[in-house]
Length: 493
Image 1 (cartoon, rainbow, N blue to C red):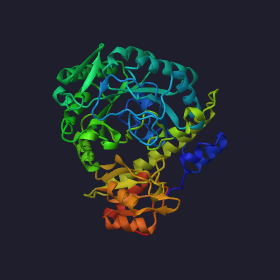
Image 2 (cartoon, one colour):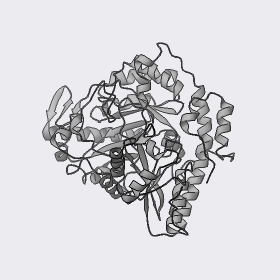
Image 3 (cartoon, rainbow, N blue to C red):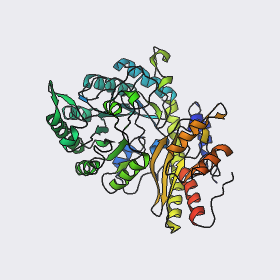
Image 4 (spheres, rainbow, N blue to C red):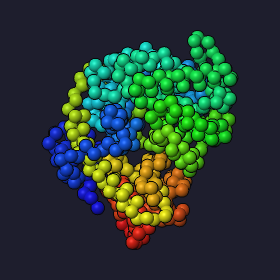
């Protein structure tokens, strides 16, 4: 077992470069070339430079870097049956929900405050709560304000694509390298089941005409971005019985037009959210249904599987949200950007991620060399850093990996309610966690008690803390070798 590295949370408050670097090297990183080998062999260096610190565009980067969204764009030009924008809401975690709307000046103050306190921050995104391209003046003003003070922060937007073609030139001029477009259909007939109306050129359209206009504008915007070298991520909401099988066709279309990533997300459908789908009983997909569709798409446009469907005011690493720590009433009136923490953190990560990549490559090779015929779905309790470093009872999500003769790959995540609060666990909450882990073979965590381990075993899921603080891939590689190689996984920890 490799030497443990401290968590990202404990890195964040440190201010001494020497202290942080000492902590980084204590994790076993001694190679002078650490960090340089993280680029995939088949990726263009210019593209790698754009994505290497972007947690949404690089699965590897999401272990180390954070994003924040600023809610400066509340106006929207389409209605989606899965959307109900909610303001002043701190209790829901889904797109379109925010606790407070911001002006560009307020957004700048918030970004600087976050950058000073969250050294993992690498990306500023505008994802609504409406549409960033439709509410363009606020989007542009925010980017201009922030980039003057923090020139190295990556800028990206999320859009439904209807107004996108009108602003591609400005996006390119502002050095926006990343744009996400939500594309749920390429057949306007299917679009009529998803979009009640759009507002385009000062007119409201409904039905087939609305879907046709939206489709044409989305394809045009995607092609324009590709022509200018701007990386695009396509978000598609999987709606069972509506567009689930059709997303195979969507994947083909966006690949042909140069999309960098395709992110297929599950419909979030709950009557309490007040959406059309929620109120009419449209169900979302089960975790294994989503995985099955994503598996069908392998070989098409490259898939993103680590999306967390973030709020429009999310702050922090993917899988966490620290937005409530940075509401306007908690921010100082005058803030000055101090780059020291972010610069120090990048020094730490440059060393740690190189060690991680080497360990991952070794683990993947070992799995392939076992010549086993089976596969394992493994759920990891982690708080970041690419390690098995979270207590089972404290986990609010599990990252899911598949180990097979092809190697080790990230395939998704499962959100859960935290089981253990104040040292005690609720049986009903544990039942919910077990339900969320449907299809999982083994859970790996930093620590787990006998009671939840026994309950998992009764549900056909094994659990172990024998690999605590190992790199995720190292732990999975050892588990896989034990499962299909020399010995069975030891249940005791």
